[in-house]
Image 1 (cartoon, rainbow, N blue to C red):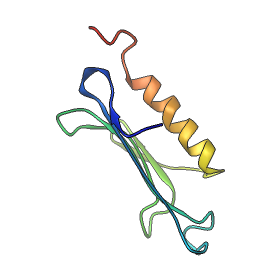
Image 2 (cartoon, one colour):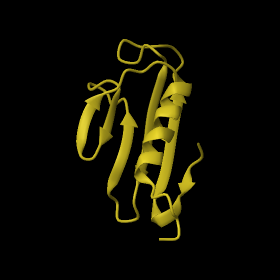
Image 3 (cartoon, rainbow, N blue to C red):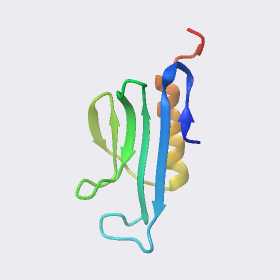
Amino acid sequence: MKNGFLPHGLMIECVIYQLPAPTTERPHGYKYRLYCGDSKGCCLVHYDNETGKGDQVHRQGQEYPYPFVSLARLLADLDHDVDQVVPENPHE
């Protein structure tokens, strides 16, 4: 998945840092922020692991724990969620 714009003014931003070593809060060794929102600043899907909150996903204004398995799975889950919010016909 690349950062950029999707149909209907949606945007994707993915920021992933590999830490020098795993930590108690980030045993997988990554700090990340994956975002999909519209041009008005409305967040549609957001994955992150904010300090003190752990791995989480935000969907439709709700926050849920996210069971981190791997970086590849995280990106696949974001792709899946984005597919759910992007209209099928980009010319509508």
